[in-house]
Image (tube, rainbow, N blue to C red):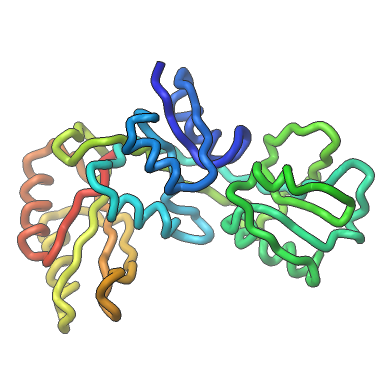
Amino acid sequence: MEKVGYLGPEGSYSHIAARTLRPNAELCGYSSFRLAVEALCAGVCSAVALPIENSLNGSVAQVTDLLQYTENIIAFEECVVKIDHRLAVLKGADYSGISRIYSHEQALAQCGQFIFKSFPNAELIATQSTAAGLKMLKSASDACIVGAHTDCPNVVLSKENIADEKNNLTHFLLIKRGAAADLSASRRVYFSATCNHAAGALVGLLSVIKNGGLNMTKIQSRPIKDKAGEYRFFVEVEGDISDSHIKNVLAEIKSAANSFKILGAY
């Protein structure tokens, strides 16, 4: 049976994404993004489902870096999961006594306004995943942020979504071992590129995309780890990677860039 890895214990948003992408697979939870990718590279899993971007907080830097710096892995499918955050406490607990709130750092950030208004003095403690925060509920002083789908004995969820923005979506990628040559038909292509640290260099790269008639759906920059003050650009464009025109435009971008890597097509 196919094995698919994800972040966190059963019940995390990554677990939902993995189940959505591979409903019949055996799912394996990991305590960090890196451990999930290491399991993939070691052949323990055939694929891993990881979040790449949230509609409120933007890109997930750890996953972006793992795609960039890990050899022979490639994103090949995607799904979008609607995020519905609820505050969870032990049965009988009074909100007035909450002094610690646990959850994944992304969930804590996405509920920042609610936390500030309702629990301005609470200590915020990051966990490996939203579902992992449930294990930290030891007393009436503890709370955690989990998904509305959470079903746990002795735990009560808030009736309302506590996220600062209710239309909160996370984009997940299914990643496998392989290279760009293994990719088939797609709607979008995701790649990274670097250019000279000079005036107009980035415009030159973007002009290739424009002149090729491609619609750019995302661009972000990340510092290059061993080059202070220089950045790598991560770009998503619409297009079928198996199409000859798309291949030609990507080849032009590669030629114009100092470095170039296809991270996925889905």
